Image 1 (cartoon, rainbow, N blue to C red):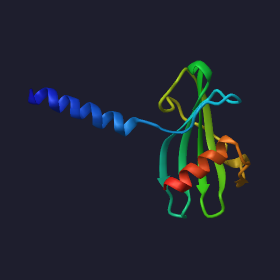
Image 2 (cartoon, rainbow, N blue to C red; image 1 turned 60 degrees about the horizontal axis):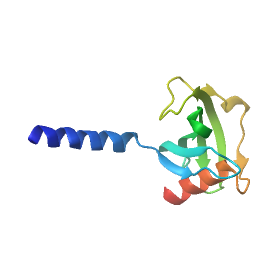
Image 3 (cartoon, rainbow, N blue to C red; image 1 turned 30 degrees about the vertical axis):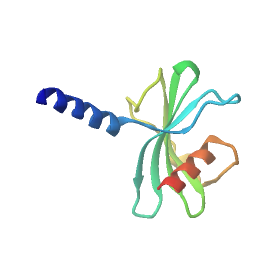
Length: 123
């Protein structure tokens, strides 16, 4: 009995550590489902965020890594990738986009705007 409880507890802890936070549900205009996978406060006051978008029918997953500045409500794209099927985390390194990126202001209603607002409200 104790062994069964220990295994159940381990499974709950493991799933909590790997579960993604939903920040945008599918809508009539966008069938993707958006998640925050990881977030990490940085020494400069920004927040590093790894997010995903699972496409309609779980056909693919797009991953994006950003720096978020909550004071200015802007983001900077660090990298990204796309994989077939629904994935919880990237299985390969993200492509580096930082050399062609810049700090970007939010566009109301966009998924990036929803992400920045979600991160800055929550953290």
